[in-house]
Image (cartoon, rainbow, N blue to C red; front, side):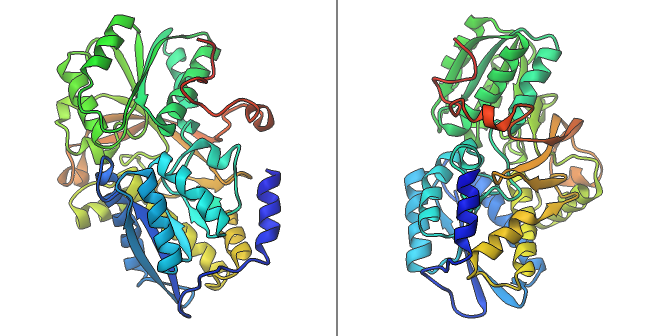
Length: 414
């Protein structure tokens, strides 16, 4: 917290080393156009592009010039692309990337070079917890464990007492599983086993066999991109869908994944997220149908987050009359934006740069109404937890004394 405030004051005297032509604002959009998370990357670009196209690529009399840089779903490449964007192409702000490990690789570079970095999808906990920065804001975003603290409590309340977790083997997976494990065990539940699958896993049979051997009454799963498609199909084909209760994180049943999976494979799956494309709310429904008519597909959380981030950042730029050279004023204006409602729901940033926002219990069901033209299934809201903090109900100062979630710290003693 002190770091954020100190940097905020320092920003007032900061100008960028690389400036764009007068009248333009150069944006580097880092997205995985190729690799494991390519579907998400395309949706990120689609959401951002849709908003700025609607606004003639302008804000406060200045033209927004966006260049997309493909991270390839790879952290090292994401950092290389950020360097190219800033040092060669004169980018004045970075939006993205997608994966938590990509964000963790790029954020120190943005801080070092005093480039505003906005994270609509990178959810790595420590970017807004133990290592916050005034230059890095999770605009329209979240923290990995924010939604899964809720999931652990809910699982115990449903009568589950013995859980297994399966998550991708990188920061996002560790933090999603950790949030679930900590609150589930604090309630009195037991963790039978925790399994970590590398990004790009196509065969989940060894993990599913270990889950069966552990004999849990509930499984928490966190997988992204193509991994989610493989997991969902194999969970069903192994016959586990009807045998063991499954709680999914947000990305597992994201629209970018379930749009390519047979409805019988995903129908009825419960998940926890900060976005639901089937939410019964006018702003969400209007966007879902608008996006559907343009892309012939329903928007994922990535598309919706990047569209919302465009509005959020644009509002900040408008407040400072397009003056991107004064980083302190720009970041202060962006930090002050509060959304009474959005495609994702009400959002405002906490003191660490992470939104306080709704968490939804979601269920995959057949689409209805006009949305059925664009997808066979979607996530609807069963229950809303409003104003959820990344610190859940913990005291932030006390919470930050514990380590970030990792394979060796999951919030409980094994």
